Image (cartoon, helix red, strand yellow):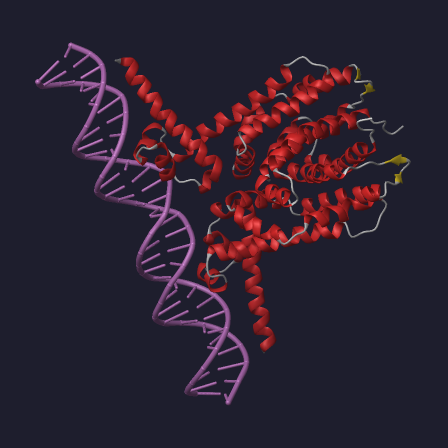
Length: 216
Length: 216
DNA sequence: AATACCTTTGACCATCTGGTTAAACTATTC
DNA sequence: GAATAGTTTAACCAGATGGTCAAAGGTATT
């Protein structure tokens, strides 16, 4: 049967891809070993090269897939039409839940960007940030609304600072998890609880910033 | 002369250490090559093993030195006796300037923590965080003061969130520099300017948070 | 100047690692 | 069931890499 053959192929290729993602995400390009990927996929090392010609090709396939997953997730989070304050809360909740499900991704991406900056330049070259940022925060900026009884202010030149801050405070704890977790636990916190609390904390941090009076 | 001999030794060892720090910080333990370290130090590969028996030993020496440098810097920043708001500003200014001078350290530390969590556990085991956090923020918590005309609030259980936030928003941009820099520049910003502005932004973010009314 | 000690190196080694290849195995087609 | 095409593997290879070692070079001690 043709079906069976194709599904078998797909199966092996997927097993390889899955294994590669796990190993690369855990050890990075340099630390990963083709043999380990093969073992985890339950196949011979030769088969890796049959489906993906080289380590670099396999890695690129994994990286591109992961990068696309992240960008898609980001765009998706902001599609929802909600009042601004709810949108912020929704962003942090979704974003943190995503990171909880993929805790290894931040450091994986950051390490690879450092190892090979060119790859990221190509990836980000297609995106129109000017437009994206204004889409995301524009409704607030163009037309300051009263939200939850508070007036929110945002100047255009603050956008990069605010956006990178939103990403920083969610991504960093996961990138630094192995540092943070033992520290928190020695103080009686669990990382799990810390992360859950962070959703509300981050939301309030941003809203408080936007609702404070400035330079007045 | 004994002096000359000793100073020569010190010289070579220091050259090796310096080269090792550069290479390890740039490529991590896995990506670094002993030959490259030797080349950068202008000596033969054998000499590396003469002074530091193995790659692992050399790496550990570098890592411990860097880790200690960071912890020392942190403690030092908070020694200054200043009004709380000024202390926050002083923290961000000093911390960001330190990172500007050592932009590779964040990702170096984070990667190594991920590669070898045990090492960090040992390093952090000695530190009493409960005490440190209360030393840092305690004066505010014990005795809310009016600062710059504003009343600042902080609940003990908020401390971990706030401290990790302060670190996140300063460290993350440097860890993600190769991602952020091209994005910012495509929007007309320079990373340099972004980082300078971040000092004030971060300060205001924290102060706004502390001065907002909660749960009222 | 002979001795002893420290430093430095080139040559070398064992192992690891990404990658190749020929052959075996399986399924499909005729 | 023979031929054809696709899949999988064991054995192998070349180059890289961390590490060793004996010998050379230099410096101080006697």
